[in-house]
Image (cartoon, rainbow, N blue to C red; front, side):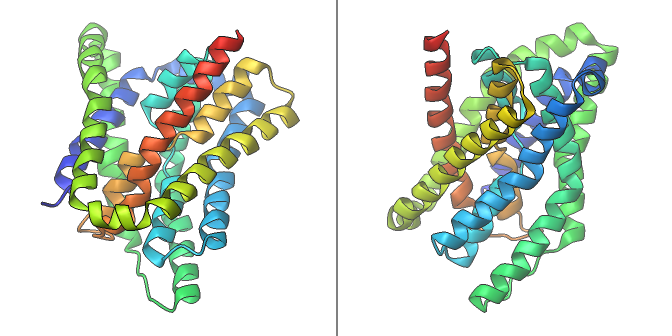
Length: 284
């Protein structure tokens, strides 16, 4: 079974939910707090892929896992990061702004970064990995931008209906993502069992280093604890569904193995950030 036909609807639902959450205030906040938005974007778009590349290179991951780990780092968190920011008593408006802007900007930065990484991995491993940049851009527009735009239109013209739909879809989005993870585990259980140690270590290092480095950026910016928690969560949470969709898409990489780092990352990400939120709430 090709899991792309499971992951695509889940990704569309997540991005549609994000679109519903958007409003004019989400983008006007950029002008109100430009430094926080700028540092958050630097963390998501530039710092995180660099961390993933360093982790993958240090642990000498195989070419497909190398690509898969960096791919996760290039896919900014969806609407779930906004929920975690709320639970951590962060700046939810800033969280929505960062999520929205990064989702749009990475439509174009993701192909550029992944093309560079595919060439680097090919040089390191001697195995040629080709990236169809045009197809990747088109798929991202169809699965990311179009659902976001549709959700924002619904929120603008039918706010009450949008709120009702958001409540329903919000309840099924996370369980659907966990079902997707289960399907991948069952389909690739042998590969996961053989490589769980290195992939689990890779994903854990990526998450923890992202959180530590983004916290450092926030200290440099002199931000409040509320803003710092938001940036830590935004940089620490990536859109695993988008990474899985790109890795397993028959139009791009068509590789279930490349999607495995994203699956393991999704599980560990939720565990680590739930622990983070727990200690934040305990401290407060």
